[in-house]
Image 1 (cartoon, rainbow, N blue to C red):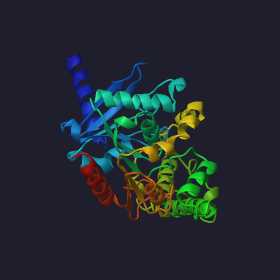
Image 2 (image 1 turned 90 degrees about the vertical axis):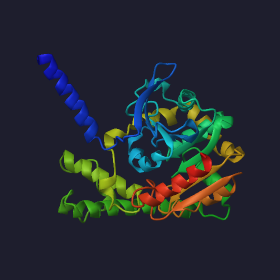
Image 3 (image 1 turned 180 degrees about the vertical axis):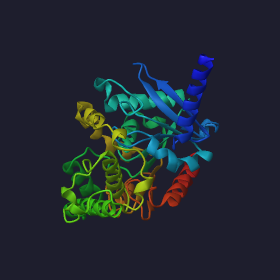
Length: 349
């Protein structure tokens, strides 16, 4: 009787956990893809019963973030396409020794997943810094890439003003790099002010902060634990959308991102070496490259740079999503989903 009771409790606990999770969808299967160094990559495969010809691998942002924030906006699309998401090496559900977290190893991990899915060529859907992994994979295996779908993409150069200015000089020689950089800084300052006003309105931060400049407020250390979490979510929403009004739709939290992963990847010598090749690899690629970017994405407000980057590509296309920021589905989810689906329709026939 005691064993039966314990089993009932375990079953009830598992069932309750699954049902209460906001990210579980009926057509998904979760599994682990094991690599040759015994790292187990957590995989969340939506549209699991669709044929492999309808498959795209989705690369989450970060570095050091995880995949679950993409499930809800992508779930409607998984009715027609098999979307394979996974936590990259070192991210939340895929722990790995720090010494193995390099851009070179992440490229190999991605190719291991491609092989496990039995795909000769792969369509990559990448968000934010996940695009740097897509560029690195393209550089290493151009013959294995069917197409690239770049959502809110980071520019295909190493991080830093010098590399970004060199790219801007090439694709937009008449452009004003200093003004572009200032626009980004001003956007982030304005986003902080929006976050402050929203947090005041919601009663999450005290009225005593009303006259404090937003950039002097530490959104990570306000009030009690609940207030800190909600304040962070408002701040993150303001930066990654056109306003802070959709902050309650912002998923995840601080612990869903591990900055040490980003430091491990960008701090390794292989990253600088690989990143120098991103732009050349992208220019030399003859397959389709689709860029989806919002009008107020802080990586390229307008956008102004990416349309000119796309013009330099052999088969480049750009879709600009109105009233959307870096998380391009926040505030305009339907347009984002329709746009992404229309692109997949052209690539995975």
